[in-house]
Image 1 (cartoon, rainbow, N blue to C red):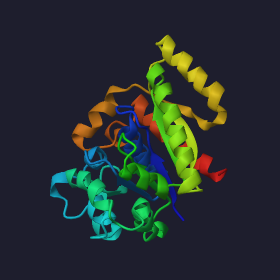
Image 2 (spheres, helix red, strand yellow):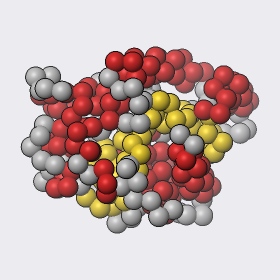
Image 3 (cartoon, rainbow, N blue to C red):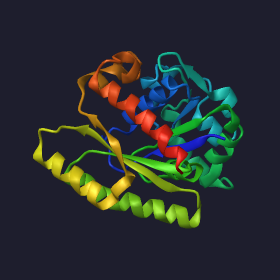
Length: 256
């Protein structure tokens, strides 16, 4: 049975997609069978995995509306060695079209259930908003991975996200829990980064992953080549950190 995790944060630009793509590639390198679900209409995770979003014949949009299934719509990332349920701009229209559908919050959960046995991990890259798409991700998942920068505004948004997760847990998905907070784009030279990092450890304890993802140019360059950073430059500090994070994830789920 696959372990299903959302990579979520309401704040944009905090490294959600970078984390989702590189964690998928890192887990694949550890011989895990991985499906990456792109739930963002921008389709950045799709492109970052080396899949052309303008040439899709079926995507997560058709899957959510019941016009296709994951077996038909999924693509294989040659550069990352994992499967992708891709997305493109069509997905933006799904919000409106899903309003009238039955069981609209659990469309993704029902779709993933049909391929559950094919994977060890399903990672869902959520859009930076508390939308119907994000809600589908949270309802399908066993847990949430929250990537965050160690800066003041990140702490403000975190409390809103934690409250949302609590509400979804109470009303729609009792399996849902916070798996952990991942510190990303970390610059140890900045005093504020060190202070916020210490605050997170003090407040959230073992919910904070031990792995810290450094600010790294190679991770930022990789998507333009259609590759996860882990494959683009395996020796870079960023790639090494995501491989270590993959190993930490495998260990952490054993204790869940």
